[in-house]
Image (cartoon, rainbow, N blue to C red; front, side, top):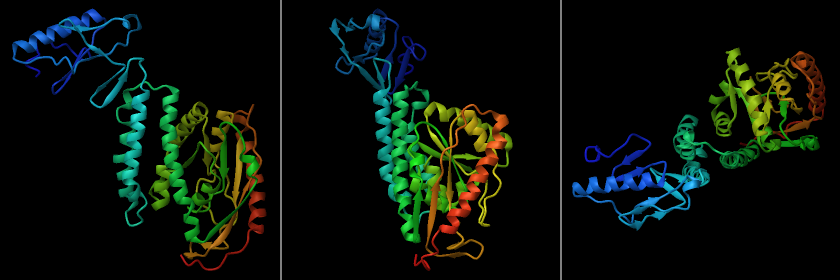
Length: 376
């Protein structure tokens, strides 16, 4: 086809071809008709023809919108959207239908592999590869070249949040298999509009189950990159859109935090951070790293502390002993950061450390003892 059309074919994007489909682009209606006639004549000389019934006309120029395009005197059908190589272009210049189609494709892929993602016999690495090759590409295919409006970005985000809620539902029920119970207080402190930063103490991967008890809408998590390989928990975190940082590279972590603060404000999301930076089951809270506090101050967003009671009455990691038990979560009042600067980060960090340490000792003393050996 390239050789047959060489004399009339123009460079992309004015002429685009795929097999026997041809797209002709021009700046005016008259140019379209002229180029269409040239193509008709060139193909006719070689024993081929342009199909009138399969030829459509789309106009994206409002000044040309009221006119028509003719082929050998017959009016070409005018359409409001045009499909080429699986993508949909609309006459108003938007991509709403293409986004809806991509979202649907993502859900179709999700449904196909949900059984794989939930199968305990399949390794986490395989599950990750399946998700990366089936769900996410189906949803985002081709959109990297599209200028999306805020409404369309929200549609894509909403679809992934729904997937996260499904994962959350599945994870939420894991606690029953482990014989865990949760007691939550201070719910009223999460009834805060807009972006904010949640900080909590970090004892083990069981924290993820506790997070699912109270995780607010539009909330994601900042976690160490090593968690990505932590079995099923890592898989859940990865699917949920968690922001992973490399603790060994300070510049990388700071860059991620700075970018995250901008995204947090732009998209009005909430972030959950473990300021200790590592797991700790020594019956106290480790000194805080300052990344979360720099993040909150940069975004001028409030900080909401959440404290998990000690797991030591039912889970001893070194002894590899695990019994069913009850975990107390206490949501503390928010701390505002409006008006604070980087000079205030150290004092803010110390203040929250003192508040959370006192709350940890309180809820750990009140937390009920283990419910007996787990049968799971």
